[in-house]
Length: 155
Image (cartoon, rainbow, N blue to C red; front, top):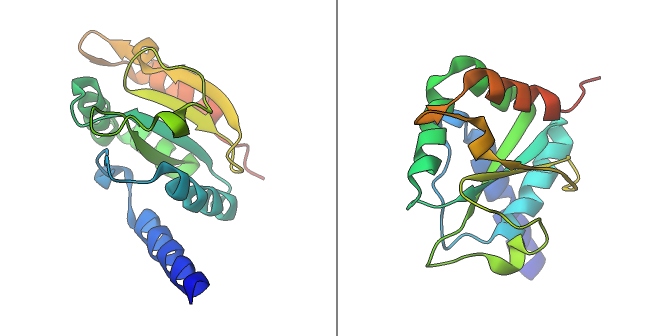
């Protein structure tokens, strides 16, 4: 019975992730379990031959909201993300710092921060998103170069 319940939860989570587009990126949820979420995302990434971006930040973070708006409002970036990556938001806030989960990755200097993983969940790159900024927003060319550099090679 317990395995059926776990399978059901994984199916519901997978359906939920499949239904999400960059338009409806989920918020940073302090109650979310990043270990469970990552297992679902790894399965989905394997089935779709996409890489994973862990987007670490919080609802308190103005730059986290700016990056979401930038992605949403920049068609080329939005398309590159949807075609090549699965984005998983990892909450970092006073309510839940997810320290145990994040301890497996390099230390983060600021938020938002991206970790690029392959479809099996192996860390490929740690990206300080400050390097993608321009003035009080993000730089389209830098962002596109980042996504193109880290997208999976399609067969």
